[in-house]
Image (cartoon, rainbow, N blue to C red; front, side, top):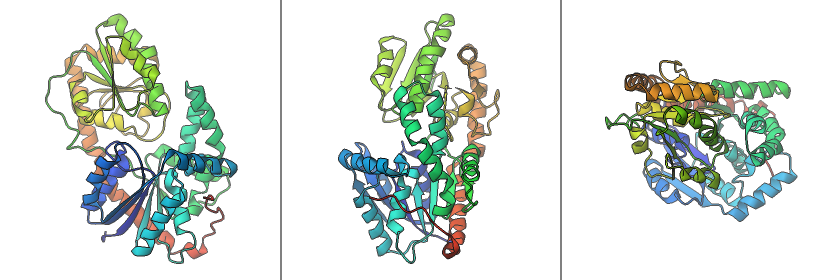
Length: 422
């Protein structure tokens, strides 16, 4: 397609940890599009990520949002009827930064990263007579995630927060078709959830929803040929994220004791940022390593024997699974971690749900270097076929075209949901 001018609006700084917006933005720039990034900042690692992004973008504007501003936005949201998630970075400063960019240059489309930035975008374009089309990359169905967290999270706090925002988020996601010109989502299951909400809330179909799956950087994550440990299981991911924290507890409390009965010297590595004290406590066992944030995950994946993804609940595509497969590391995953994939169970990866079945799958791989090598090679071949970021970027360009076509009919579209007050 012809090069576009894109305003990329994000609720955080895209980075290798925020892999989807980071990689899509990289690919958009490589494909000849001109991108201006406006994002919320203030994180400890933002400077390094911004340094990587500036050469890719015409302009980069990062607006620091402190804890006080976030708390005030959430308090305002509690008094309204919009989802609390939409208040995450809903500050006057970020809205104004987006409006300034819209005023200084014409854009062909506004790319909105996640529900958390949705109201910032809507507030920024409110009242503009020639507002560009709005493409929401919803990433996941957040209401589906909340529904599963409310039922399955072992944390009472997580269950309570999910229930608090569930009804609000369902109403908001049901109305996507009235608020945006097109919607991208990571998996068919998440698209189904959005479409079901539309029907349940008697919404007209409105804007289309396109699946744009997550990819993996196949050059960055690739087999190294390094010798793997004989019996090391790795679980990776941001450990402060409630679904990852629940999976890590499930692995250490329910699965590994069964593995250790048969293989007492097996090691476990939890590799991810911001582990809570309860996860750090597992490291009292000499067989468990909790790394915290690591500058480069690849050495840990390259040295492990097998990757575990015992996700008890979640939505979308699990990047941890794709990254391990790309490194040629065999994966044992819960069924929930594979529903967004076209991988073949038993060939590209192993699938297990119960602690007994999961432990048996891990032990079978630990006992057979040949089987590990076969599964690892098949997993690498799968991600090469299906999960390149260039393919996802091409799908995203189709979403932009659909949003622009939809915007030509904007005058006929009724948008009855006003932006959340800031």
